[in-house]
Image (cartoon, rainbow, N blue to C red; front, side, top):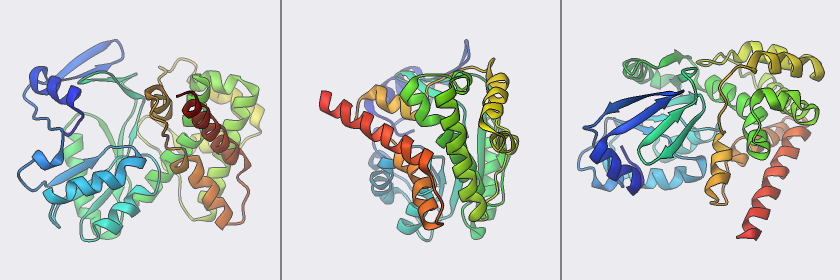
Length: 302
């Protein structure tokens, strides 16, 4: 494991703890954690990329000394641009596209929380040549006990996760509301429906197919979100009212106060893609501006 020093020190001393709901499970206490890839004195068989999109370039620079052309890169990051960036930097390496589904957070050094047992990991090859490597990754991850889904085209996974993120990630960061509460709010709920619909239209025009993800029926959600906004809001609010809540990754970015977010890799991607297809993406553009304004204000306070 590669992590910052507070996490590394505790992992190496007490192990890594995963909290699920109100229970917890100690994964194991003999893990080896390092603060930098440079401390690893071998070549890696598999590297799992879990950094924020704005840290991808730096992470690629750091891992280069510990990989060779047979090293597989599994990308579990938000957004749709990371795999291409990895492929440009490492054209000969197998690349697996994936998505982590569920609300996760760091509560304390070496303590990770999953708000419920809903969710898991979806993965698939980024390119056809990577299919066999993706199947091997699937077998490894299934050994963890997580729900795993496999898709023959990794781009479908990344865009399906993006559909969820464009609708709820930024709005949760702005409002702090759960999915059900967002959809019960007329203004925010309507905005969520509109951002989702814009992403769906971009996908349709680009021949990208929505797929279900672990714990998330994206195909059903797409049908509901295509209904008139008031009806879509009521249906989603009702279906999610008893779900565990959590903070989105963007909300956690704001809590850290580091002045960064993945908004360009989420809603910004839809805006850019829509422009190329001569489509409008006003709702995503609105959320993009709202987050940029929030970041600007936070920076001004500092």
